Amino acid sequence: MIKEGKRLPPYNRIEKPPNMKFTERDGLILEAIHAFDGLLADYQIQRLFFSGKRQMQYRMSLLFQHGYVARPDRRRRFSLYSMVYWLDKKGFEYVEGLGNNNRLRSDSLKEPNWLRIRHDLAVNDFRIDLMEACRLVSNIELEEWIPQREFWAHPDEVNYVGSNGRKMKRRVRPDGFFSILSSDYRYRFLLEVDMATEDNPRFAREKVRPGIVYLNSKAFAKRFGNRSGRWLVVTTGERRMANMKRQTEVAVGEKAEVFYFTTFDKVEPITLLTSSIWYRGKDNDPIPLVP
Image (cartoon, one colour):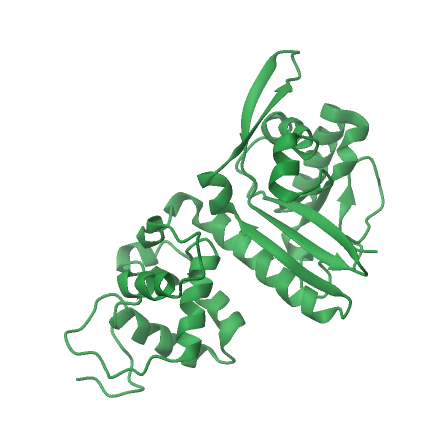
């Protein structure tokens, strides 16, 4: 048996792992993995629950060795910039046993979509920054976050007219939805994380036109209780952002004002909500999300 504090094998489980007392924080980690669309990177777990990297690594190794979480094998790990974790059987059973999560899905036990993992971790980064941003401002509260998995499992569908005048139909699947309360005013945002894998005309065609129709649809009102909302687009760099903004303005004109653009490097807890880092469609000067 390996003594407590010793380094555990990173890619395989041993027959007799060290004794482990399951703690309240362990439970919160498992709940967070599920809440964050079933996937968290090690540095994200550290941000949420630990002050030090070594402590986090050993605790996650114990949870792995005891079957609460799963992680990639050696070959897969070498293709990633960070270790990632998802629920294994015991972790799923723990979260399921809490009885307060009616959205628990059996696909939480599946491996991540490796082709989308950079995108999914970027969504998590934004969400954690948002949580910290709301804690930094006394009169702002994060009211709700709906993860992207919910929109993939239960998408809304809209009918709209394409640039060629043809009637089209599309399912709307944002990367997340959140609402915040500020001085008794509720702001609603739909998130689109762009990893520069699509060309700009395709973004306007497949995201912008149906996205605007969605904000004014019965489906949106039924789902969120209101028809007011904005789209947030976070992308890789200034040039990409400027091109996406311009394509949006060309595609929908004045209606582009419901789209707000920024870049990953500008998003931090201290800037996300109240600093002028967002470029609204049809405007030239950056503005904050919350005045």
